[in-house]
Image (cartoon, rainbow, N blue to C red; front, side, top):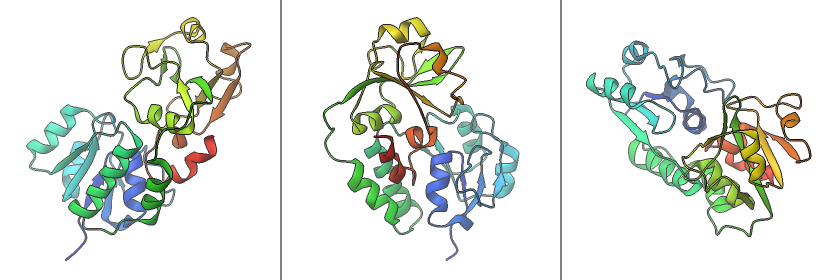
Length: 232
């Protein structure tokens, strides 16, 4: 039996699938940058996928995510008779369990070694917090990581207390003054989805330590989990 043809609309999931069977990934978004050498048809972005291109690929499965992709696009693809699997990942264990179901039950693929290692590394008890952080993910307007998000759960497992969890929304809209009122020990500035740099971000928080980190390590849930421990 030939391998299923899969279109992935989620960068983390694209990287995870390609780690086992890259040739089966017949379509992926332009934001699916890992692995760097993945040869596949690009179907535009996560929020504006090229539905016609996806239909022409005739995939067996399309894998989307509740946060990353629009419900309208999912509905239109399903109306075309395509099988769309929508994932919902808010914690590290959610990610591990989702991949186990995808690999074992949907695709009938072997569980990769990185997934077993990530489960062992990240799915234990939460450590005692060692510092209080705020994690902006966008500027003008300022958006920060809130509760019920993968990045917040990973932060907890890194030993970080997210000072913004008491704010409304999963990604609260705020401003610099409100961020400073949260009294963080350090402000974590990732390089995606907004590209914070040494010249773009830290200058807004005089007197508060800032750290520039890889957005992939903080927000992606795939093979990058093996590297995310370096954020500690």
